[in-house]
Length: 489
Image (tube, rainbow, N blue to C red; front, side):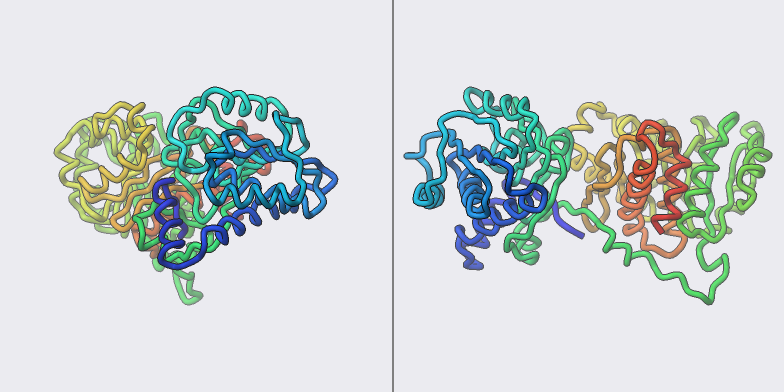
C-alpha cells in the first residue's frame, strides 16, 4: 500500500521532517531537484536546450536547483523567473545566488526551448491563476515542447485535482514523497502526463503518523491473495452463487461468472430467470444453473442455493421489481459474504428498508448513477466528492463501498483507497459485471473480504490496461478484459 495526500498534509509532513526528524529543508530541496533532473537526463539527451520557468516560492527554488544540475551536466540551460526576486524567501535566494555565481543565463521573457521545466507553483496553490502567470502557461501549452512539472503542474489544485483557471499540460510530472489528490483525480491527473513518485527522504512512519492518508494498492499487495495449494479440489476454491439476469438479459450473468472463474473460483452456480437457462448453459457449460419464475417465485429454491454457497453476488442484469427486491432481501438476511451490484443496488434504492439491513459482510459496487439513486444525491455532487460519499456509505451502513468512476474509490472499515489502474476503453457494457465477478471470485478463493474489495479494482483495471496495449481503447469489450485476466494471473 502507498499513500495519497493533500497539499496541506504534504506541508505537515515536510514541516515535521525538517523540525523533528532534523533533515534540513535545503537537503530535501536538493533531493527533490535531483529526482527531476535525473528523470530529464534519463529521457532527454544533453544536446537539447532547457528553459526553467520558476516562481519565487519553494517550487521555484526547486526549479533553480534543477536548472543548475542540468547546466552542469551539459544542457544548454536558461531560467525565466516570474515574480519579485527581492521578496523571495531565503531558500530561493540561496539557489538564485548559486545560479548567478555559475553564470547561468537569466532571460526576461518566455523563450522556446526543447525542454520546459514548470516550477511556478507547487502544492500550495488555491487561487485562480491570472495575469502574466496565465499568459506564460498558455505560451507553454502552445509551444508543443516537452514539459516537465515539478511536484504538480502549475494550476492544478493539489487537494482536489481541479483546474485553477488555467493549468500547465505536462508531459511528465515528478511528484515528491507521495501522490497528491490533485495528481490522482480528474481533471488534474490528465494534466500530469506520465507521473513518477520520488522518495526524497520522508519516512513512511512520519507519513502514517502525521495524517490519515488515502491509500492505493500496487502489485506488491497481491500477497493478500492466498496461495493455491497443490493438494486441493474444486470445493477448496469457493462455492460462488451469482444471482443475475432477467427476461431477455442473460449476458450479465455469463460475464460475471466468467470473471469469477478466471480469478480462480472453483464452483460457480448461477441463479437466473428461467428464460436464460438454455443460452447460459450453451455459453458457459462450466457453471451450474438454477432458475426462477417471476410469476411463481419460490423462496425455498433460492434458500437452497444460498445454503450451498460460500459467497454470493447479486444484481447484474437482475431488473427491478417486487420479486427482485425479495431476492436482494433474502441475500442480505442470509449474512453470507455478498457483493451487491447494479440492479441489486437499484432495488435497495426502491426500498430503504433494505439499506438498514446491510452488514459488514456486504460489498456494494455502485457507479455514479446507482449511487445517486441509493443516497438521493445528484451525480454532479457525488462526482466532485467521491471520497466523501464512499466513506459516508461505509460509515452509515457498515458496508465496503466500491464507488466506480474514472478513478474508483474504495472505502472499507480499515481505510479508503483510490484505484490508479484502468482506462477509458473500460467504459463499455458489461465491464461492471466483470468487476463484480472478480470481487466475488477473490472472496471465494479465500481472500479477506476487505482485501478483495481493494484488490478487485486493481486487477480489473490492470486487465483493461493490458487489453489497451493490444487494441484501440474504443474497441475494448468486457470479454477482452476477462481474457486479459489470464495474463494478469
